[in-house]
Amino acid sequence: NWDKLNTVTIACANFEETFTGKILKHWCKWEVVRSDLNDVLDFYEYPNSERVTIHVLCDKKWSRTVADKKYKSHTVYEEAVRRVQNHIGNESYLYTTNKSRGKLTGREIQYNPHGLNRYMNETNIVALFSYNPMPWQVPILNKLSEICDMPKDTLAKAFTISKFIEPVFQLCTRGNIRIAHSKKPINLYVPDLRTAKYLIERYIPKGKIDTSLMIEVEHDKKPK
Image (cartoon, rainbow, N blue to C red; front, side, top):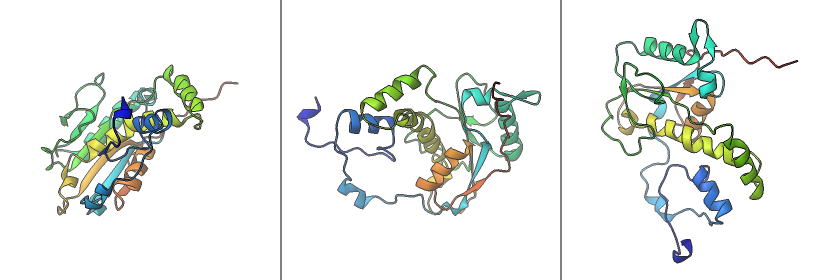
């Protein structure tokens, strides 16, 4: 019973854009205000971020459907893995992918790895997972958005941020970027351009986006 509480302080990188944030604000009618504790944070954006290069792997919004599309003699996902491993070479790297995918040559860590600090020596990090709303979930999320007088796609977008884009951010910040004074170059490999822009706009302002590894996926032909 939330009425028992006068205030609740939530500590997280992003709240209002997430699925939980949207539900609590628009469905449960929470009033969301900035905490005074923000004034004692060490930073809002990662310092020394000019050493970060974000490599985009696909020219379409990443999903399991896109990843399983045919690319030459294999799939888009397999091509992404090939390009990443060729680019990294013999260096070590962290990665996360969906459980249905096979193991890669790097060190796999858990999905949504909040709070893990034991990988701060790693400078190569690969995000190849996908968690988007299922087709049957989308109309439900759209209807819930309309009930709360929000734009129709609000909750579907919030679901994607919570399940996909924010976990990519959490994965990408397990490595050497956590050592603010380090000068080591960092390479982040992310599935699509929207994810790269999200990282640049919110957390890694001086990072560079590189599209030289991007796979051009054949677009579906419209039916007659």
